[in-house]
Length: 151
Image (cartoon, rainbow, N blue to C red):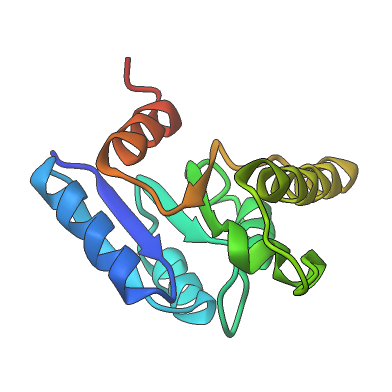
């Protein structure tokens, strides 16, 4: 029986891309376009895997992740968390100069470490995989295999 993946992301282009990749690989795909809609779908019909954007309206991905890990019926659903570097570090990035890739990655990884450290400090688990947008097909499939424990 094919595995079900719920994609929760407010970027319809990302949802379409991921849906096409996953359907081509034989997965059943459900989608939600904000955190509240995603939470409703997740609670109504838990998927085999959740792909979750960090920055979304109506409920961000981190809040949704924390809530699901407190629900017995949802806590074992593996999670791939997505984020765009520009969205995560925009408030930290001075506007008066150009940035190189190395400089962008450092603030991203610092923020990621803070997020994961915050989860650990609260006794929470962290997502199985954390991916930076944009993603390609190979990254997505590798992340899915890791999250689902597929050799």
